[in-house]
Image 1 (tube, rainbow, N blue to C red):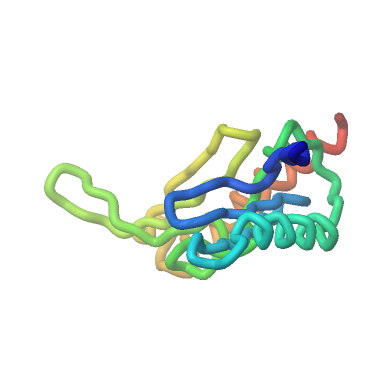
Image 2: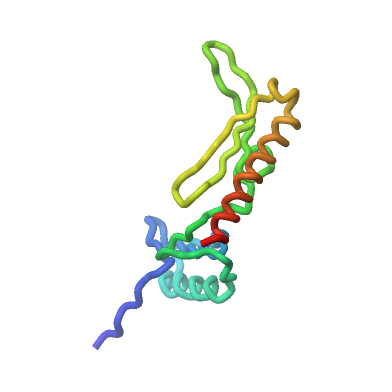
Length: 148
């Protein structure tokens, strides 16, 4: 008689192997195990257990494997700040420099605003305005979440 197969919570089979992904407190930790590794699934389960053992609990509510709020602590932009991106917008035939700020208000809904470098008097001022707007929205989001 065979052992019952454990559910593969936090383990996703991908074409080249297994992706182990654990999210706690808004922080995503992930490990990739290639198919070429001997006993790859066993290694993926071990990696999952290790990530779950070391994961902080945090203040967030969880619905299945997706947390109520997701934020990325590492900047995925060209400004060095989380949620702020330096880009160009086009109006008719003219291009103008902008800072785009984005923040996830609730799970699945993103709010964004654009700050023109010319209107704010320079790159640093537009970046500061975008950063302050984003921090204000995040502060309001945290206050709403604590009320629950």
